[in-house]
Picture 1 (cartoon, rainbow, N blue to C red):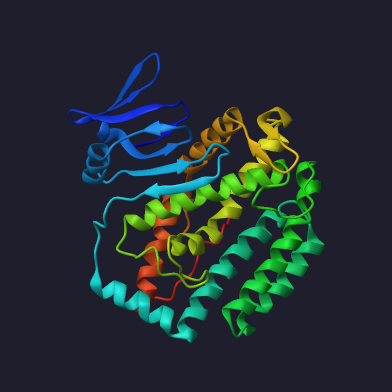
Picture 2 (cartoon, one colour):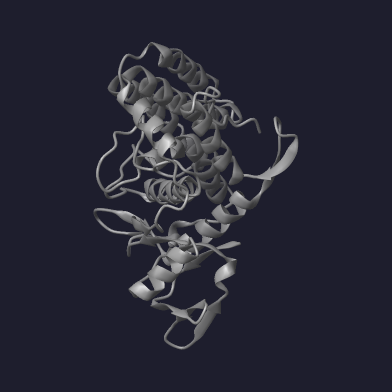
Length: 321
């Protein structure tokens, strides 16, 4: 099954038992059984008949606005239901000690993977600083304190980005991104979020109950928790590679006085390489077999389920390559 990216405006509709994308000058038919999920980066007309069909086929539809910012997703109704797991998820949220324990593991996994990116580039001083911060994770007494610790670690991490990429960065800015590097991080993080969300949907986990990020209305905050672990590996490394290999250039960005965003051409370059990264395989040290990078996300979710059910302590994916 494949992920489909739509960059041209048109109409997406059900045609018999498959999908048709009708553009101004052509019609493209996509076998529905071949679709994993769909990303829409342009204006698209659709109707409830199409959404009902996508729900039947368990296909997620992700929308991005004109500037490439994530708008939202159409998620088919839950197919993997477990009342028992839902109760355990809520229990772990309401019990502050259990919630903090899980939140710490997400931060610990994220910082390990961030450190690995710097260790490979011999930023020894920053690695030492990250080590000091990591030692403080176990001493944090609240989610707020833990998030403050993570923020300090990320600032130290981002301070190296101008040197790694040779591009202007300054500091992290999101809404709107102030420069090309910030635009890339925002776009890549949104892509990672949707990948995690899709994998959560294929388990019995409820995506709205989270531990590091505060659950709130209108967002799937568990995807934010888990994405923290994988962003340094799948997004940050890709950004470094795209810039260092000169695959992305200034011409791939539209610049305004107040913001910068990826052009359609820039998004195409990013999603192509992102998709190829997810499809790469690696020998899993514990399973003793090759698995695709994107399968690491699902494996982490299964580990989280085991933790919630009291079967095994959750240990986040820590990059070893």
